Amino acid sequence: MTYENVREADPAVADALEGERERQNNTLAMIASENHVSEAVMEAQSSELTNNYAEGYPGERYYGGCEYADEVEELAIERAKELWGADHVNVQPHSGSQANMGVYLAALEPGDKILSLDLTHGGHLSHGHPVNFAGQVYEVEQYEVDEETGYIDYEGLADHAEEFEPDVIVSGYSAYPREVDFERIQETADAVDAYHLADIAHITGLVAAGVHESPVGVADFVTGSTHKTIRSGRGGIIMCDEEYADDVDSAVFPGSQGGPLMHNVAGKAVGFGEALDPEFEEYAEQTIANAKALGDRLQEHGLELVSGGTDNHLVLIDLRPSHPDTTGKEVEEALETAGIVLNANTVPGETRSAFNPSGIRAGTPGLTTRGFDEDACREVADLIYDVADAPDDDDLIAEVSARVDGLTDEYTLYD
Ligand SMILES: *Cc1c(COP(=O)(O)O)cnc(C)c1O
Image 1 (spheres, protein in one colour):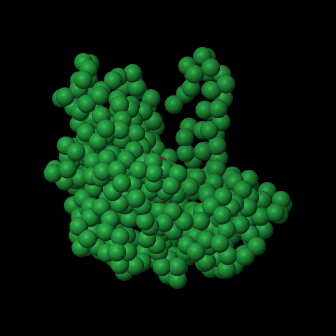
Image 2: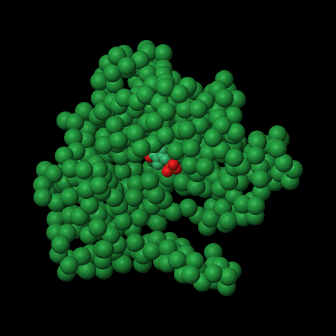
Image 3: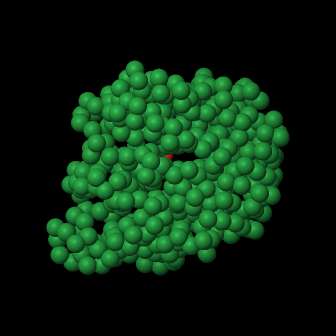
């Protein structure tokens, strides 16, 4: 894509857009929730559908002029059904958080009870944190991971559910490196007569490719972001059984949104189409293989991983055992200077603050899209270790930066 028209109309914005392209081309995007979509997805997202008002659903819109919006939305829905095997799909949520809001509105009354994973243990703000609307409208309690093993404490969750009697149990996480046992959480939800919302925001692509257990057909509601491992247009998605279809649809529109972002829905349709290609399964498998290679090498260097490894696309490093005086933020900043972009993250049993936590979260979806294999990820692990070990060493940072340049030159991204 070129920004010719933006350049002519608005050089300041064109500079920033080109700066961002350069930044993505020349750095390693290891924020576990990020990915690089195809030029086709980006083109669709910048289409004339941005001008269209398509309030309502295909075939039942409030305004005229929606025949192409209908085509695009129907394609997105059909492809999503095929990818995840869902009965009913709503592709209109503006984001993953909006998808969760839609489910809460469909399933709960204000004051109802949510049981979700603690944010510092890998949960998400939209699962009922006090700063999020869900924490203000609903009564929220949280379950945890076992701090010894780093795995979800399924027994603790079952006991907590029995005691708290939640209306909904939320599974699915932002910083959890292990496979989630959705069936087991469903059993707990059934035992206390609660709904189960499985938020697969991070692992949408892994589930679609069949390389992670699927909650579709197990949990009552499944939500996701559509721009993470699934690599489609930016936004959210809700999947559910037919029995909840009307409630979910009216909770999204008019319950919590106005006109859908039809250009983004077009991006979702294109990205879902790409994910139906058998090559996408290879991508998902490689993403996990890369995370395992990254994690193994980090451990060989003596860094400790929460849960001792990974089953998915991310690793969570706890710096405290190997580097008790170094914070995640320091390492994040030093790595960014060197061209490796990831984020400081809380770890189970966090002893620092959320703003300057003890962990580092690193994901492989973006690197795998660029073509990285296990060897290249092991090289990245060496670089991460070197910087974590000496975040104040400017000569070292310069050396790492040069090796990052070598990698980004070898594995190119956008023209
Ligand atoms: C990323 C994420 C979301 C929110 O997605 P947005 O699209 O950023 O709103 C929700 N839940 C989980 C578990 C996530 O990781």
